Length: 367
Image (cartoon, rainbow, N blue to C red; front, side, top):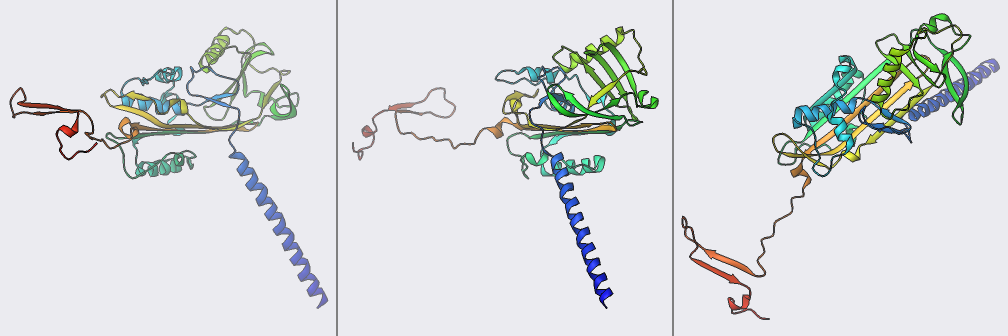
């Protein structure tokens, strides 16, 4: 009997221990998931490849996809703000990046009249195609009615890609990056196997401060890393890489004693593009519209195994009549006025009067 009680106590203690471990794991897991959703601070979003970039700037083509639809499918002409044209709008109008630079399975986009049904369609479509939920759709206002004299539109795009390296790169010791310590790195050192080195293609190497390499993945995605550029737009930086690659005469393969050191990257950006909002412009049919709200997100990760990117862009385009408050008109004649009488079909009135002193026409008026 004593042995039975002792066994029951031991089992109860084991169950309590397992439950405690399980709860602890769940708490840590939830914290990790929440940490992934924290929006990165102190990073900027560029809207086009031609935009001047600041330190810590990211660009993804999702906003270009919906801007192209706004310009080509809705406005049917370049977007020109009536009250001053920002440089970023001119850059977007160039249409440098299009869906032609993406595989069909990597993106989704839609441009249609804004309705609740459209929101439901987008949610279903991105769930079916990417098994994803939107992080921006609920930031826009949705209603059953399409207010205004003309139709209001909603434009949306999502891009999602994941890529893996055929062989995992070496996890390197944490090190310095600028003034920052304990930075995580991956890459190639003397312990790395030859098959991993084969994943690296040297584009050019002029010095340890001026080089570019390409990391090959299992898919068609290529990771290009460069250091030493002085250009100020992503387009000009990329063009410089191509030019230096063409003129480079050195070895394009990764040599036995070559070293590669790449910092792990992880960021999550979400930005409301206020500089584009509430500025009127015309469609080719003469109707005036404005961007009520515009948003973009960019999530990116890169480590020794591979990487992934997910980006959304959304834009609410409204007819200007919806922006102007419908105030009641007050036809109140309470000061000097003029009155005419005229027969129908005649060119001139047959009576006219100008009334300034109402007491002259109303005997009961008192001062």
